[in-house]
Length: 195
Ligand SMILES: *[C@@H]1O[C@H](CO)[C@@H](O)[C@H](O)[C@H]1NC(C)=O
Ligand SMILES: *[C@@H]1O[C@H](CO)[C@@H](O)[C@H](O)[C@H]1NC(C)=O
Image (cartoon, rainbow, N blue to C red; front, side, top):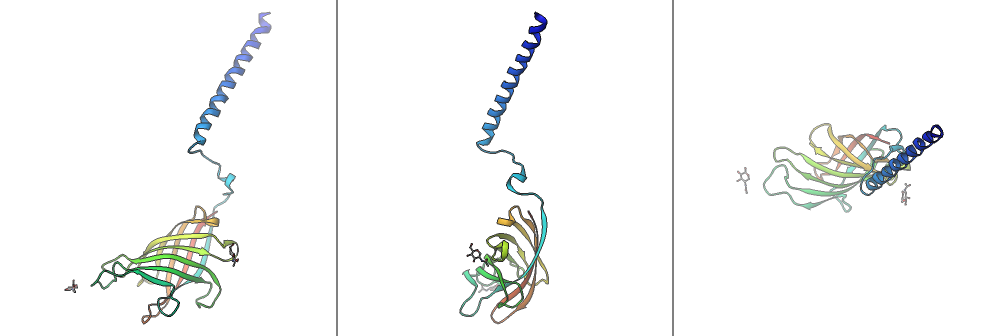
């Protein structure tokens, strides 16, 4: 008799133990769900990180009837670097260097003169794309722009849409600078890791 019952008792004890264990697991995950839980990245469609290179031209237009850059804070007086100046921008991004070439997006944000010794800007802008599948996606750039240098590098600090989890850098090269109006056309090369 005992020989028959013992395995049965062991089995049912194991079963109860198993139930208690899974119940406490449910409770534990239940608590986690309230605030934070770890997630498999594939569940949100993040499969393979890729590196993309974008190239376009950024048009900063201060003069004329339709400026794309507007001063919102004047520089503190008596500085040669316009220290303190803040310009709000909604600059067109085009495929070619001409303003009339295909519009691929807009650079929206501001730049501020942040250096007292040389001309050095703090750039804070979102590249809001309009082209193809990138329409509606954005890349955020925040960095230091020493505009008199031939090549300026600034970090890509994030993005949205197709650029979720974006990181990378941009390189800016002045293509044309009109000393009279202050208008500038700048070539931007963007190297970005994203999914
Ligand atoms: C501007 O700065 C220079 C050099 O620091 C100084 O000599 C001059 O007096 C200043 N001018 C005014 C109007 O504050
Ligand atoms: C981009 O998306 C907006 C809003 O969905 C739409 O109105 C617009 O026509 C699109 N532009 C292009 C170039 O596809």
